[in-house]
Image 1 (tube, rainbow over the protein chains, first blue to last red):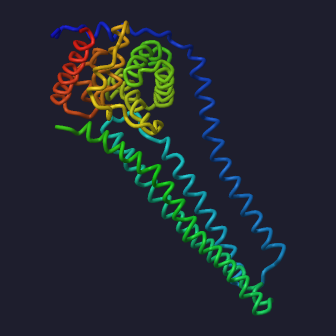
Image 2 (image 1 turned 90 degrees about the horizontal axis):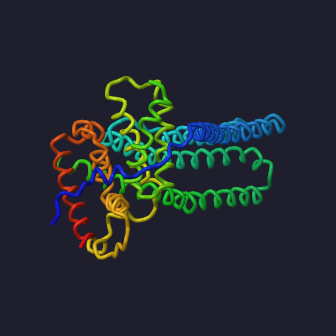
Amino acid sequence: MNNNIDLKGLWNKQEADIPDTKELFEKINAYKKRSFGKIIFTNTLLILTSAFIIFIWYYYQPEMISSKLGIVLIILAMAIFVFVLNQTLPLLTKVDFDLDIRESLKQLFRYREKQIFLQTTMLNIYFILLSAGICLYMFEYALKMTFLLAAISYFTTLMWIAFNWFYLRPRQIKKQRAKTDELILKLEMLNRQISEND
Amino acid sequence: MIFEDIYKAYWLKIFRLCMGYMNDRDSAKDLAQETFITVWQKLPDFRNESSIGTWVFRIASNHCLRQIEKQNRMPKTQLPAEIEDVIHHGNEDKMEFLYKCISELPESERIIISLELEDLKQAEIADITGISESNVRVKIHRIKEKLTKKFNNYEQ
């Protein structure tokens, strides 16, 4: 058994050329552009959708308060969606890299749990607001239809909402959870490694 | 302190730390670059609460650990230890063997031993990892034992 292996000597044998700082600054710029682009994209999407709905309000001039309330709820649903998205995107990249490992793991953990909460809650609020908004908005136009037609319209819409609520929403939540759960498991493992015997 | 000076003084050290963690030159280079991007971004906020070296190593260690989010494969540490030992190493260079062994350790041990081999004081390692100094000492001792054992098997 040889206990005098020169580990430090072997370690220091590893050589590499120092890349030019130019390469690094190119990466910094590319990174900045990418994260900026994401935020611009989601916000433009919100503004365009809201503009479209406001155009409907202006063009079709709904008379009843229910229609107006419906429109407000739909816009609110999308605004909340994008607002939360804007909040969670930076969470993924915003970690204080200069904390010690133990602290930064804790921080990462908190962020991930917050992310799960935001995603699930946001999705629920989004669906509720959107469904309520659509039902309210339809009311004015349903009144102008025959009873049968109005019933069919509401039935189809409600079926569609139910499909979203009972099928698409749980699926989406499950997908998001699977992603974060695996990560949280790994984080827990790291935490154990660090806290062991301390 | 000027960024370029830090970059020149620490690039190789950080690259070695990342190599110990990943044992892959391309990934290690990427990780080192990510580290220096953070250093560049955060340098104006650096408050001299720790030495610049400790600070840079902290950032690098955190970047290494964040790899966990990018890798979907099973952690290497879940391989049974016996399998590792019977692999025939042929004429593999000793230096490469050391880096390979380190990259097969549990994540936190990879960082601790890399910092130790980089000649950091145990107090600095404690500062980077958030583990107490006495525990750092114990861990280093155990990791070195593990590595020595692997080297002895390798040389037989």
